Image (cartoon, rainbow, N blue to C red; front, side, top):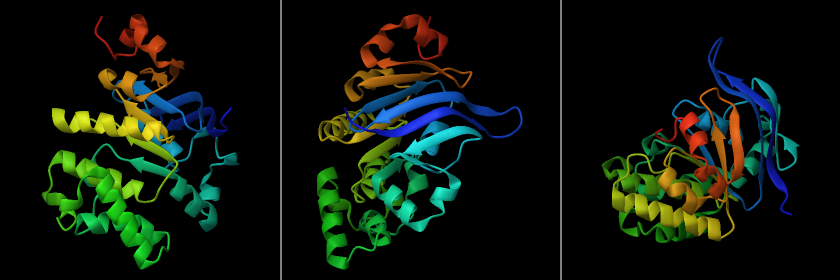
Length: 248
């Protein structure tokens, strides 16, 4: 059996008094799994991804990553943080929030440079990543001049250039035209088939069966309502209606 990468034990997160985002969440993610986090807007999907990415810490409960407690204290350790950031990549819902470099090539090079790779190794990572995404022709373009689909590819490239084992995606199809959406679904399937561990937050039920092995449903009360095989979850219409993911 693959080892657990993430383990959440009764995790809660509050943005302030009377503003819960997650309430008592138990969750495990094993290596090689592809897990879909399903829920209506404001159910806590993005918050859960941020916790997995080490960008926030739970108000209550505990998280372990790779068998080690994932705490604010652990993330202050430079060695642990460097290892964790190499292994876990997070692609934001809003690609523009992730892009800040003057060119696409510089954007994709940023992460490997932070890892301390030498110039030739960084150049190779950039070439390979741009080729994988089919955006070599955009290398010298400024990211803010690109289309929405192109920006999403660059944001993914800025994460893939770190060669992470685990990829977290927040609403990856939001704002994409049909061609870009179809490409993204095919690409995520390819990552899954290559053995990457994927956790994808979405309320786009049309893509879930093609991307995930498991589906975890968050209700509007910020609790886990269901955790099981994708087919069984998607077939449970009353569950989806109750979670505001389907029409009655």
